[in-house]
Image (cartoon, rainbow, N blue to C red; front, side, top):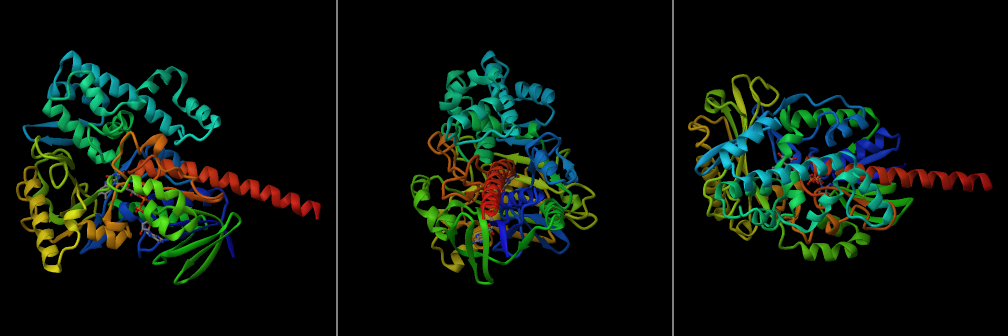
Amino acid sequence: MIYDVAIMGAGIAGMATAARLQAQGLSTLLLEAHGRPGGCAGYFRRRGFSFDVGATTLVDFEQGGVGGEFLDSIGMTALEGEALPGYVAWLPDRTVTLYRDSARWAAERLSGLGNTPAHRALWRLLDQLAGAFWEASRRGIKMPMHSLADALHNLGTIGLANLPLARYVGWTMGDALRHFGLRDDPALVGLLGMLIEDTVHSTVDRAPLINAALGITIRGAGLTRHRGGMYGFWRRLVGHYRALGGDLRLACPVEHLDGQFGDFRLHTRQGHYAARQVVSALPAAITARIAPDLAKPLHRYLKRDADAEGGAMVVFLGVPESEVGGQDFTHHQLMQDYSLPLGNGNNMFISVSAPNDTESAPVGCRAVMISTHCELEPWEGLSQEAYAAQKEAAGKRLLDYARRVYPNLGENALVYEIATPCTYEHFTNRPRGTVGGVRQTLRNANQYAIPHDLGPRGLWMVGDSTWPGLGTVACVLGSRIVAEGAARAARQMHYFQSLITQTQ
Ligand SMILES: Cc1cc2nc3c(=O)[nH]c(=O)nc-3n(C[C@H](O)[C@H](O)[C@H](O)COP(=O)(O)OP(=O)(O)OC[C@H]3O[C@@H](n4cnc5c(N)ncnc54)[C@H](O)[C@@H]3O)c2cc1C
């Protein structure tokens, strides 16, 4: 059998692309290396608990959102879960509640972080940028632009009225802070830095302002934790994809890809598969290894971004409910010290499963994930003993920090596990255990990001190493662009084939 489209990698980007194409009537094959789908937005189960290995929240999955459009396009009903009302940022000297509700957030940020004309002007600009570019994302903005047609399409998504905002394309968040004289305000810069590191994997001085403004406002776009966490989400999504007729093969890593538009060949240990088009939903470094046709065009991007990679550590806890009491919110983001670089616990996220979510935890218990970004080098070249000791110390450090929010956390844990970059390398195949796409800067984001159509015709790329970058919402937006392109190419191929048949 020859599939219309084969997709390599069943992370959120690959799954979303496959489901969109299948829902449009194309035959799709989705090949996943691991025994479960999900990749960095996947899950594992232990003793009745479900843990999210990376992403714990789905962003903008409500009606009209980027994720909502995806669910609509594949005919899937709304997410079932907890729409987070916001979360609490624990700065070294204060807490600030990041309300989802825009009016409450507008009041909170002024009372918690400063209410000078400069503060108000900065927030006004960030609100303006976020409003315009969230809307453009929902309307399918596409980068990098290759042609006048792309530029016109993007103009339509942004709207003429917002065109003056284009002057901020060359600004970083640091430029905006300096413009308003706020670069040295520790609490404000600390909070923005945490949100930026978490969403665009960058720093205030290097993150492009527009990307940072979108990252800072993801709460407003809506964060949802599915019932059962990612386990619940993937069960529904995979069931839906298979009901549409999609073919998902697990534990089936693609080792090599060759061929051309109309006749690609995917080689795995389980067998060889043929497809008219192929989508690589793998990180760019893996794609370059598997697909020689993409290795050359990807080379300059991979070289450029080699020092813009990072990893993550996560502590997974299954605990009695009493250990996570006393808080109104189930999600918290913590910073320990304004003067230290972010990562390694100095910016970490605590995600607790919702009360009564018995798909995430047995009755009377809760699943807890504590995650932080980290450097990759300290985890490389260690002996087994040194690795085990470093992992134990890292887990203990994160748990100690988390006790600022939940003082008894982990005292009677039923599950306690730790993931490091080595764990990610093992379970997602990501070289060195890099996660989260590149640390975004003006030199590698947007117009300079890895495009979706870098290779020969019919060979596409999607996922968090391509535009727009990391996160479930970015991957879902990328899947829309790639699915539209692949469906268009399939229609053109079908048209030419029917012309040839008629003339014979
Ligand atoms: C700790 C952490 C917390 C995060 N928190 C959030 C959050 O709360 N919200 C959010 O939106 N985002 C979050 N993210 C980011 C988000 O999880 C990722 O950006 C996103 O899941 C990446 O998806 P992807 O499909 O591009 O890549 P991946 O998830 O890496 O998917 C690629 C898939 O390809 C498979 N694969 C690899 N090699 C092969 C091969 N040769 N053949 C076939 N298959 C192969 C892998 O097993 C994997 O399943 C977080 C990430 C981390 C690490």
